[in-house]
Image 1 (cartoon, helix red, strand yellow):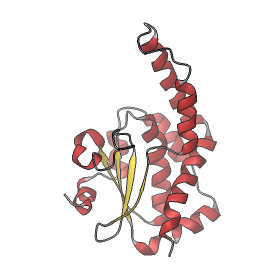
Image 2 (spheres, one colour):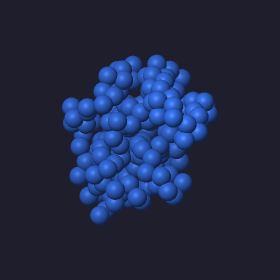
Image 3 (cartoon, helix red, strand yellow):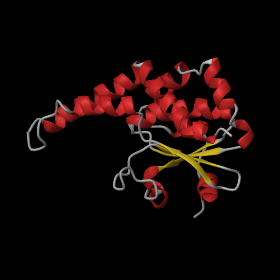
Image 4 (cartoon, helix red, strand yellow):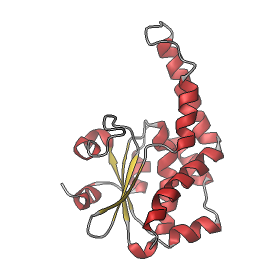
Length: 187
């Protein structure tokens, strides 16, 4: 299936929010709290002439999606680039074309396409600062064989989601990472 077809198959940001069953409160906190500076808006608005569209592979249970989808939506609004969201687990044929490190179905993944459906840029699943955070949090976990592993892992992921919602520096790290990715699209 072409990227154009995948874009058409997805749902809008508003439909995605309405369908959310997990992480909705944190997601909306980020979306409502995140804004772009005038310099950021100047950078991203210059992409509007390219009439790009964005395909997002995501799932509402994912902490990274809770952070990244709202930030990408704010960027897409300024770029005038419609965002079309697809559930990862229902779209594995596309997901498997965008594996992290060639093996992991890590999400979210965002694919910018032109009007003909050609891929122009890909970003995801994490900004470097977010990757560093999760590595540091996971470093405190015991071995998987430890009987307390599952409980401690659940606590690490709770802490991770809480930091994603509260730490606006992490929001900016996502914006900066996406901006660096899209800089190559400036003519």
